Image (cartoon, rainbow, N blue to C red; front, side, top):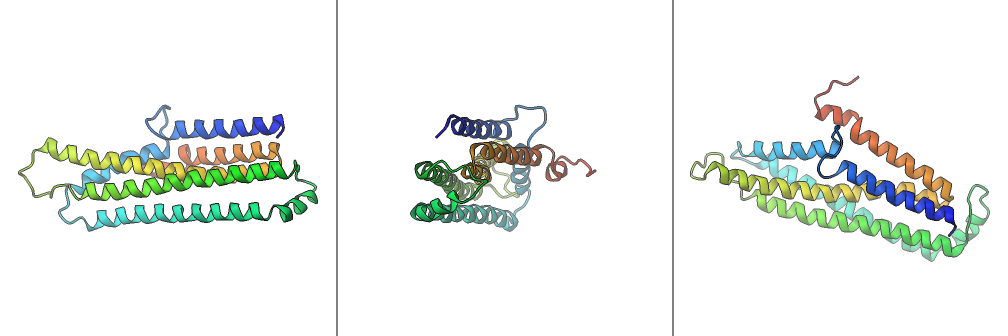
Length: 230
C-alpha cells in the first residue's frame, strides 16, 4: 500500500466521521440536516398519537420501520457473502485487473486487503441495522405503554414522560439505521479504491457531496421545512 493509498483511506475515514458528526445528533450548524428535522417530526408523531384511542395507523408505521430495517440487514448479509466469494475468485480477478489499462493494479495482497475492508464495511452496516431492528422492537413495546386519550386518571407530566421514552428510543433506533445506510452509501465510494487511490478520493468526495446536498438542500428537506419548491 502506497502513501497515496494511505492518504485516500484517511480522507475516507475523515469525511465519514465529519459527515456523521454534522448530520446526526444535536444540530451544530445553523441549518438543520434532514435527519435532524425528521427527529423533530418523530416527536410530533408520538405526541399526536396520544390524541388517538385507536392506534392501528401508528402500529403500521412501526411495522414499516422494522421491515425496512430488516431488508437492509439482509442486504448487508448478502453483500458480505459476495465479498467472500470475491476473495475465493482472487486468481480470476487478478488476471482481469492486470489487463485493464485504467486500473492501477497494486498486487494480489493489496486487492485482498481492499476486499477485506469492504467486507468490514458491510459487517459494520449489518450490526447497525440489526441493532436498529431490535431498538425499533423495543420502541414498539414502549409504544404499547402509552395511555389512551380518554384516560384522565394519569397526570399529564407522567403521560409526557412515557411519550418521551418512546420518542428517545425511536430516535436512537433511527440514528443506528441512518448509520447503517450511510455505510452502504459510502461503500460505493470505497469501490473506487479498486481502480486507484485517486479514484478512491474522487468517488468518496462525490458520494459525500451528494449526501450533503440531500441532507441540507434537497426537495425532501424543503418539504419538511414547509419551504415552497423552486
